[in-house]
Structure formats: structure tokens, C-alpha cells
Length: 388
Image 1: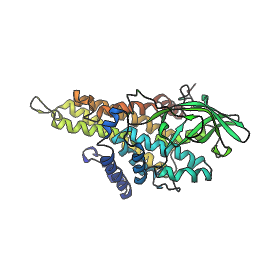
Image 2: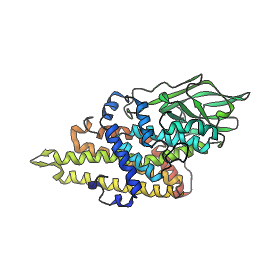
Image 3: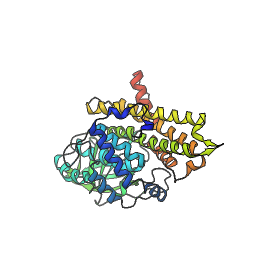
Image 4: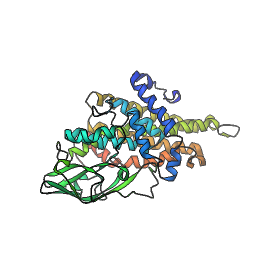
């Protein structure tokens, strides 16, 4: 953590193990991702994505907060720090890791059978197998209960019909965790992507999260055996529990994007000369930098507090909403302010600022929109649900 943006001394609140995890992920990112990610973003394509997934598996960050099955079994706080360092490179890289670990792997780890866990989790932890998580549909985003994807029984088998939209890792995945309506309620299914009738066309023309694979999932009479269903959960409790895991990681991750933009702005302000002195010497520039640092440090303290609560088994969904809503919103504002400090250079991919700002526009929406997290907190505060 850069001393210049640790005025509050937050680094001293971390344990030696937490700092070691953070430093290892930071070193990996600086070597394996940061030199290339602007080019990946510009082209909308990650070179050797499977090689990157393997390297992330060797680093130990895939499903790192899960126990057993080849997972690292690290703390929630260590996982959060890893998310921060990954997103300091790019939100798309953190998305790859969090969808793999907090959505696809967590769903199998928490709700799957022992056979499902043994079949999929070791390969996913190693980065040899890539997973995706199929919940969102074109007409069912914030209201997943209205999903149209359906699974029906046909003898001992299940047959899945439907479409999922905006699915990270979809077209490169080996396995998809797909949620569908059944006669007995919403159920999760572990779907090998080589199953007949499964396809995942990639979504193009994105202006955000370009260093990330985003796809549609098409399920055209996909026939699965009886044991493909996740046996331990029925209803929205299943997918929502996974989303809480991912939202927690985003609470940390968004701060990585903010830190990267803030660091770039601070460096630029010290070097850019106007009227015979660096623009960092002007009061209005200092105000922007101070406001950004204050919000960054407040967000980091909140993330650390939530991490400690999660490690103690005391984290609530409302607290996750608090973290996701605040930290992504403030991170986006930090990136926008940093862009103004860089002036015209702020829109160039020679600097990370506009890339982070564009990515955070997506992060602001996915895993629960601003409106939905606001209403979750509104209900927690007033006791009155205002969703309908």
C-alpha cells in the first residue's frame, strides 16, 4: 500500500499474513497483468486467458476463501485484499477471479453434492477448469424470481430451456452453474458446457469491462442427469448467497481501481507544469486529491471492518450492501475526479484512469444496482420494504 495514500495508517491494522498475501498478489499483477491490460482492454481480448487462469490458480486466488478441494482456505480479509490488488490492474481481471471463486465455485462448495465438489472444485481451484454463473436474464436482472429459464423432469433426467445474459467467463467456461425455475421452485444445476444444446455466444461492442469475457448462455433442450442439480438448496436463497460472496469482494476490489486512478493523478499532478509550477501546487488540485484520499481511506476502513466481521461469521447481507454501494460509488467518483486532474490525457489508455472509470460504470450496476442496494438499506433503516 502506497504510504502517500495511507495517511490513516491502515496498513498497521493488517496482520503479517494479510500483508504477505496482498504483496504476493500485487507482485503477480505487476508482472503478469499490468504491462498488458491496456492493450487487452483496447482490443477487447485477453491474450491466453486459459494461461492466465492457470497462473491465477498457481497463485492460489481461485476460491481462495474456501476450504478443501484444493482451495487455499484463506481468510475473508485476505481474499478482499487480493480483490483490491487484482482490480488495481483491471476490474475485468478481478471479475474473472470473483466469478470463478465467489459464484461458480462457491455455489458448488456450499450447495453441491460431494460428488459434484470432487468432480469440479480441484480443477477450478487450479485454474485448469473455468466456471461461470448463469442467473441474470435479459428481462430478469434485479428481479431474478421472474427468470424464464426452466428445468423440467423427463424420466430421471432434467431438461433445461432458456437464456442467460451478461455472463462473465461464459464462452470460455468448462462448467456453468445455471439457475432455473422448476415445479418445485428455483434450483441450481451444474452444466458441463460441452453438453448438447448448450452454447455461449460472446457479447461484443462493450465499452466497459473489455478485458473480460462476457457472454450469453443459450440452453436449447440441454439434457442433464438427475445428479446435475445442486441438492442442498431450493429457492433464491441459493443464488443470493453466492451474490453476497461476490459483492463482498467487490467492496474491496473497487478500491483497487480507485487507488490506481488516484496514484496516477497524484504522480501526474506532481509532474505537470502550468504557470511555472506543478499543478499539485494549486489549491483546487490539492482539494481534489485530498477528497479522493479521504474517501479512499474511509472505504478501505469499511472494507476492512466488513472483512473482520465476515471472518468472525457476523457479516449480514445489509452490511454487504453498505460496502458495495458506498465503495463502488466513491471509487467511481475518485476516478472521475482523477480524470479531470489529467485533463485531456485522462482519456488516453496511456494512463489507467479512463479505463477504470469505464469499468466501474459496469461494477456500479452488476451484483446489485445502486437502486437495489439503496432499498436494501432503506428497509434495514425503516423496517419498510419499498421494492414494489
